[in-house]
Image (cartoon, rainbow, N blue to C red):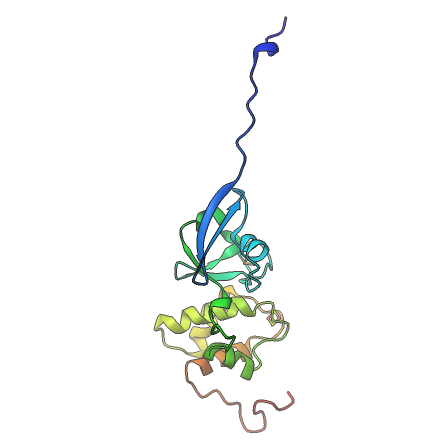
Length: 182
Ligand code: FES
Ligand code: FES
């Protein structure tokens, strides 16, 4: 004897969720699964290439964005959590015509990037620090950057670029000026 003949097996509800997020000042709509990470949605669906995937575990900072105005690692946020919120990537920093902002220009001038993989996250963290009102010192910059890993630069030029963006004189000692061989 079997009871299976009268059993109705219901299909699971599709794991698809509509979201609407203001990204870099523009309202974006999409559908995501409940497991889609924000960094993947930004990169794969919106083609926002600023946030990078360095570790997917919240350790490297390459995916750093500002989420409702606060720093966040977008590999630690589900895309569905971002529904109804605002996300800013490094693409929000330059002007519409592509002119780099002061911080970006300082990164360029002070050679604060090499491969560039960490740079977007560094810029977002630095932006947050510069807007925080905290005193900008070598120590405060390094403390702010503790969640952002750079495997190329040794951090020295990143710190200098951020201090320069705050208007500080960060010229190297005579004989080591910008543009000279290092
Ligand atoms: S990819 Fe998000 S912290 Fe490394
Ligand atoms: S410039 Fe290469 S990881 Fe920072």
